[in-house]
Length: 368
Image 1 (cartoon, one colour):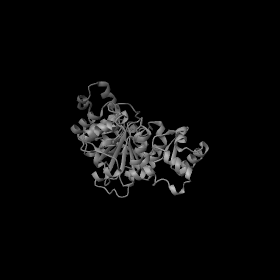
Image 2 (tube, one colour; image 1 turned 60 degrees about the vertical axis):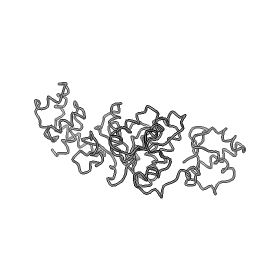
Image 3 (cartoon, one colour; image 1 turned 90 degrees about the horizontal axis):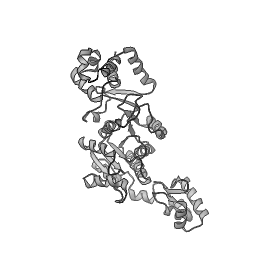
Image 4 (tube, helix red, strand yellow; image 1 turned 120 degrees about the vertical axis):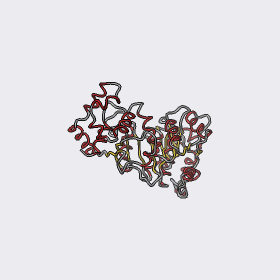
């Protein structure tokens, strides 16, 4: 068998954990040597005999070859530590994965990567900021890394795709499992336009213990980590802590001091993280050109997304009443001080033009 298949076998073999596999590699030097090892040579690596038996049974060549061949049938690629395509950044982290499964393509080695992470249950402000920073960083040539979770992760990926940028999602389950299911369409788009990657073999379902493991890969891929909305005690800080150990730049978007979902970000800034209020704050730290990205002041004026000269007076009035956070229709009518039917007509026009969005029934917000 090809050497690559032995690596594939070791990554997929049952009955042995990730750290034990690394110890076995140190001792036997190659996956082929582990595959060919006798039972008495392996017994010291297993505390439970049943697990050793399971491991030994996985060395069935016909079954192994079928599993390996099925990867290409499902558009799954595989790289291992000695592959030429193995990501260079991951080789430099402690506890580097011995193999990776991916769809789409891997990040380019000569470009900067920024991870955008934060709360799953985020506010619309956090959601729009993740999309904005994902889009503008991608526009500047930065590759966006995140975990394809709901909330901040998914919106960061979405923003990067809006400008045809590259983004990769690192999963806490098998590469063939869409989790959460609500991200199915995003998953498919990223497979075509970017990449999806997992350390876990195909078929592995998501469970709590896998997510801290995958977080070290999110930070490992990245040159910098941007946190957008995180509570004081958040799983986001697992990625931040790993990033600090790996020597990565840490960025945080500030939030209101009374907002519990921004407390984690505000604390990060107090502890020395780079405070971010513009995309250029990140690009300058990474020594990248920041002249072509949208400034936050321009964004709030809406100049990049809607031509105000094309708006009728009523539409301008309604547009000026919109905010990032959704407002109920009655509140907008009260602010605009024009007839309700005129407000509704203006909102519909603004939605068509891309200046507004109906977030839920009768709640409207500025589209950034």
